[in-house]
Image (cartoon, rainbow, N blue to C red; front, side, top):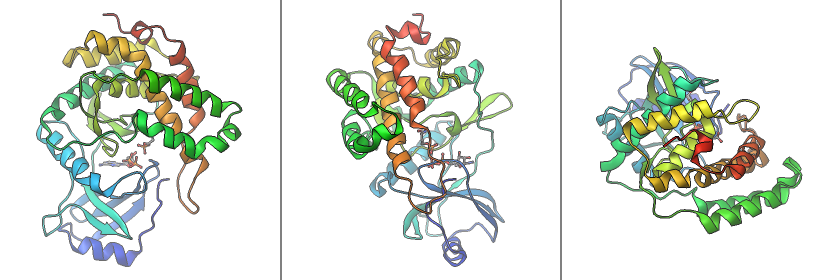
Length: 321
Ligand SMILES: Nc1ncnc2c1ncn2[C@@H]1O[C@H](COP(=O)(O)OP(=O)(O)O)[C@@H](O)[C@H]1O
Ligand SMILES: N[C@@H](CCOP(=O)(O)O)C(=O)O
């Protein structure tokens, strides 16, 4: 359960007084997520999500995230919308943290995606990339290759307690990726965390996308690589090429990949696996005392990384052309 910051009833009531949402009927800490503190608010005006931004979200980046959600919604991407208070401002402060209320999205996040979900997520991702093309605020990816070394240093001394030999394996991979990371692939606004828990489905269709707090400007194909990692492995950590094919086909129905993007896919998949391995490792080793959170398993991403390290080409992910 991700609640790092508790909010007193008095503080909550004072905060909500600034909004036109009617009385608070109930407020529950949300069991999913690992990054921020989230509460489900039931107000007289309906259901809302209250997010208190925690350690990985820089307050200066909030105009990018909130502006992006508004921009995407104007281009028919269903995503949460920041709710403005009576002064017309969405970003507030609660219990010492930056805080925002967003609209609640209906839909179900699938626990065990099948190929059809992967096809829809591929298509949805490409639509999101297109919709972001005229968004004018930019944000560098703080968790791209330059951000991995500091994460590794924060976990290096204790990495072998999680898995013997892990520190050396990460150091070697980091050094390889730093030398080979591509620089000139097509780029734009990417979601950067489009995992199954951040995509909702309703009536057999992708109904909405949430959690834009890693969104940034980076390579489109890197976002695809993140999704291949998150959506196309089986619980035994074998890669399901049928799901990979579905995701890549779905994406290319909207935005075909360039030859350079296809060729870079195995390398980008390695980078994406290392990125999530590192944040999970750091979080696994540093659960804040008293926080209600279930940290995610870093070893899952060690296994995914091993698959990518032996991949020869994009064909190993189901890319046929
Ligand atoms: N706008 C929303 N509508 C409906 N549910 C939401 C919304 N935002 C968050 N949630 C719920 O809260 C959970 C945690 O949100 P998420 O943004 O993933 O947290 P974190 O910032 O910690 O990654 C989600 O898995 C989902 O169940
Ligand atoms: N997707 C990340 C963790 C952060 O995302 P959240 O949406 O689950 O809070 C991972 O799986 O490592």
